[in-house]
Length: 241
Image 1 (tube, rainbow, N blue to C red):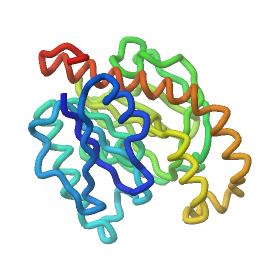
Image 2 (image 1 turned 30 degrees about the horizontal axis):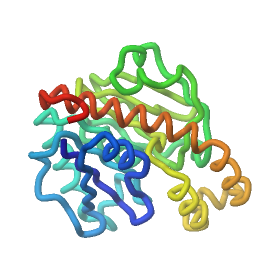
Image 3 (image 1 turned 60 degrees about the horizontal axis):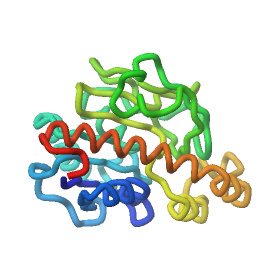
Image 4 (image 1 turned 45 degrees about the horizontal axis):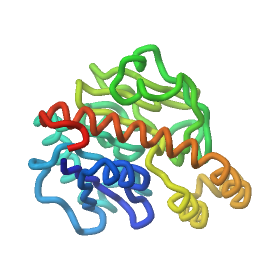
């Protein structure tokens, strides 16, 4: 199968998702509206992943490609192509579905406990995760639950995961990050005013990533496998084909 991954920064790549997808024998292609390597269409792909980025959904003046990317998401939704949005990607998906994107009261930067909802028990993606888990986060905005969507995970700060229809998901937490990705974000934390304001500790952040990343990558692989299974079912092929 062919999976399209939309990236928004040179240090915000597909991470553990690329590893899981390629190890399963599939192809992952990274394209980017933000970096000038945009896809022409989403047809011909078996699934779409929309990753995070330093920009925010409302910042169209600085990022004039955002409406075009929204159109790609709309195209995927209309074609019922399995879709997973992560952080900014989740917010873009929610905004396409008419939900409010808002600044959260407390930015979540680092590791935070997430609790899944009862509706996640039989979900093809979130049903693969524990009832409670510690997730890697880096965001100052969140989204309301789109009309008709199902909430799948939360923190006290905001919605953390949802399912829209039967083929689209959003996660606020960064299920794709590897240690290299995390360390690149930690190294450039001072470009984020919210990280600076909260007294971000680089050394403590690096130590926590080293301690947590193996477990976290295993959960990321589970989500990637879930997306592949949904895509394979819709394509009518075995998940490993």
